[in-house]
Image (cartoon, rainbow, N blue to C red; front, side):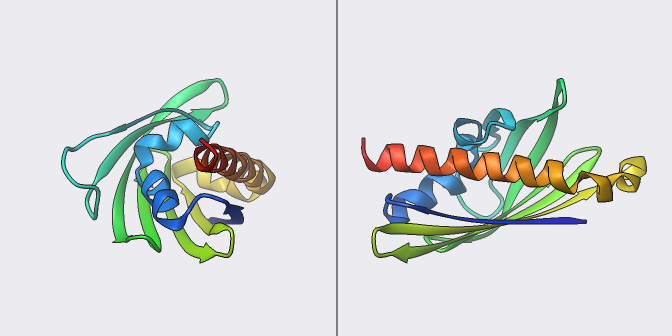
Length: 147
């Protein structure tokens, strides 16, 4: 398993930051590693809400389904993602800050099958993907705060 941990601060208030990030239909807006993202079910966002993401892997896009397993607005959302070759748990925590919101993002990634043999070699690549995603998240949240 690979654990990634990043923290950002945004000037967007906590309620708005949580609403935007917890809705993984927005993932393709802020994460350059996500080509497509859509919600799979109607209704109010909460535990059980599902999303289909097209995740960029090298030169291809692989489908990955996420579902919300913990939903505690505006402080925490946990999403579990699965595909044929990877599983992930994204634990995202939000705290009000003097000038907006601090977001603490932890992702546990587990490769499956033969790919688990190379997982120890992919630490830097995973870390770069995580940093790019959080940089994109911060840019988009700050853009929304100033819109």
